[in-house]
Length: 260
Image (cartoon, rainbow, N blue to C red):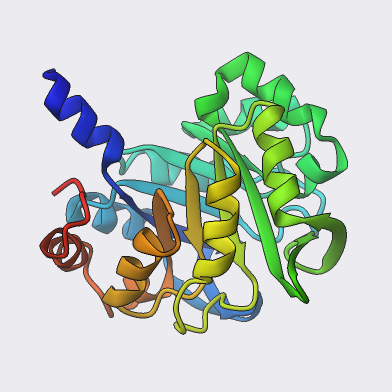
């Protein structure tokens, strides 16, 4: 691979689709509430793989609340459809949980509540699988002049700020930050570019922006003013409001490097 191609791949902005899964079905809500069905995980994974999505994230959104592991059957069914990286989150509380997800087909594991409760877990998994396999998910909302972090599917205040927690996660071995705006989740009002830029400026690892995607310009905004390395969306892809290929072409036309 030439050095020019390698540099382009490093600079390319990633488009990521998220499958929020509950009881084996993909669901979507607003502000983490009012969930409705959006389809079968494996069928959606097959579609996104064909459309050229860069990565896929499965979040078993009730696994933590129900104190169980992410559903291995769902992970295996989705992994069989993919030739792109797959990240899995929800219910990963221990190193053994992470191993179960990897053995089921995950390339990365996403830690949220467990990382806040036991930050050393980040280091344990990073040492076993490498930092590139560890994503720390941060769910946050605006609180005065800071961005307050929440755990347990956005239901419990963690008494942490998103910026300082992202810095600590990086220092403990996280390879990426998945930053979700609870305020914007499912609203289609646009990403929280101020929060994304604050976290992106504070760490040297990639930051994935999540929450609020509703139109093509929202992605342009989060890649420019938001300084995101990747952008994640769910409902606009699930319900075919925006196609992956059309989005990438739009970004390319505006000078944002993407993989076509």
